[in-house]
Length: 382
Image 1 (cartoon, rainbow, N blue to C red):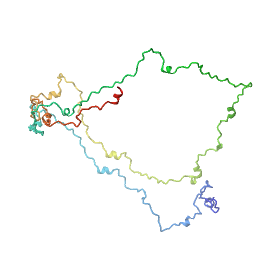
Image 2: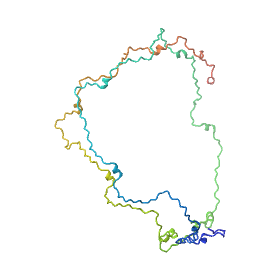
Image 3: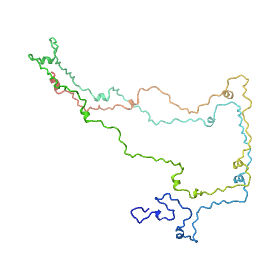
Image 4: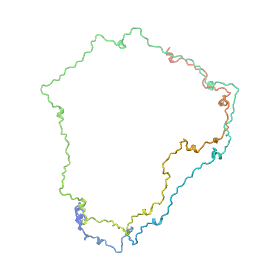
């Protein structure tokens, strides 16, 4: 748009002569109908006969019709034929037959694995060798022989002599302050301070209600300030509502009709055969002709037995008592040594004997402890 400082530049609306160019000055200009007679496109861009535009890779979606009538059978029906299916037979359970003869009480483990007798493993502990001595037992210990008590003299206690002596006279109920600081006679004491009377005098005139605060602080207008925003005057339109938007006013439809859809029309395939109502699922998956299984439950209800109840279970009826002895344990037998008489001598006494050497001498001084003179406290408290 040429509306700036440069006067040589012109606007689009001043240059256009075909009426197809728009600018901000003329937004409501209607587009003329028909081809543009003043266009330079035909003269500038000419069509070459020996050049064809590049075709798209996408194939043409053309509907191919066939004169052969429609075969309703599918490939699934032709390849997978129907096979006969026999009913599933019920397998009968084998009946339990009680074996004859008596139960001997032995198992297959006792028949296959015989008793083994193994010798006891020899202990890795060295044999016991007692070490005895002909000397008599000494009841003293190394601690008693090494550490002797010191011959320390007995220290007498220091008792402080009492310094408080009770008076022998009569109690006069006087303190030490009363005895030390006595009063001085002949003094009348301090004169009392009497303040003078007020010198302020009241005026004869009328009292004014005006104060310094009322004179300095006058009442102010506490109302809020008016807004500086200018008032808005809304202009109501009295014309009837035309139900059109701004876009519909500015950009009307060419020739008064909307553009046609670019979506291709759907080609409906119709068949000459009448509709039979069958589907591929109904023709492929047929119900099996399998006989229903008969119920094992008797039709008649439960009838209680007429014989009296003997209070025995099925286990007591089937498994009678055995006359044979119980099975022998498969645990091997070990020849354990019987304990003998109690030995009062321990391994420590027999193995560890005191050495036949002199006792260990102490590193502490042998002379007895003797205090050096008298202490300071003993000198002071004699």
